Length: 216
Ligand SMILES: O=P(O)(O)OC[C@H]1O[C@H](OP(=O)(O)OP(=O)(O)O)[C@H](O)[C@@H]1O
Ligand SMILES: O=c1cc[nH]c(=O)[nH]1
Ligand SMILES: [Mg+2]
Image 1 (cartoon, rainbow, N blue to C red):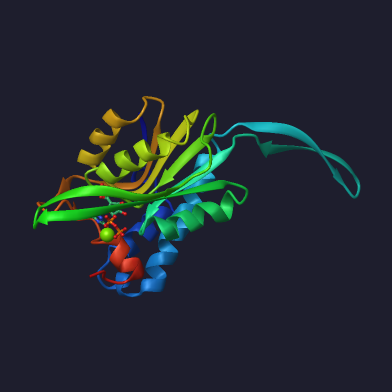
Image 2 (image 1 turned 180 degrees about the vertical axis):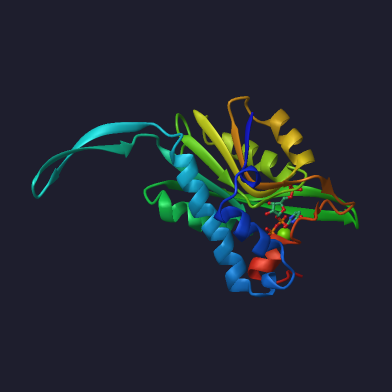
């Protein structure tokens, strides 16, 4: 698996990740969602450089211009809830993409032990398409793996990208075992630790709660 860590190259993504992490900044829920969205927009642009394009002749008012149009059939797949603003950023760039939505939630057996359940999936057929699974947080990697398995019931994509904002090292290793070798993982940054509640440390906290409010 190829891993692209945006922390290694100074860019606006670094700025937006630092705002997402900051306990002062993240109280502004609108800015929190918008920063997820903006990182989604930039990652969409970076991923667009890896796609296939058709050469097309476009008629302008003054002549014919040789141009390129994306030929990959892109499907943007998102894991509820925290994936939603990140997804929106991707969709504003890949505006013709098809979309898939998966719900994955942690059901706690006791304080530190939980299972991840998939309850809902809405997806187009995936055969031969370029699947981009977007979820800002990769902590253990379980939600990503189970969502991927659920998506595979809709067909076999020909290319797979995973886009995250903060990935733990443990999740990267986990996802590497669960996904095909040709998968590319894009991470805004990579953190070394997860704690006993499987939260990324230093991470940013609970991305879903910060974007939408604490759930019961
Ligand atoms: O790698 P994992 O250990 O599976 O954790 C990552 C998952 O946790 C978050 O979702 P969460 O379950 O908190 O749901 P939410 O987005 O609704 O808050 C996040 O958006 C991922 O889907
Ligand atoms: O650190 C984490 C882990 C799971 N989900 C989050 O939102 N944050
Ligand atoms: Mg959450």
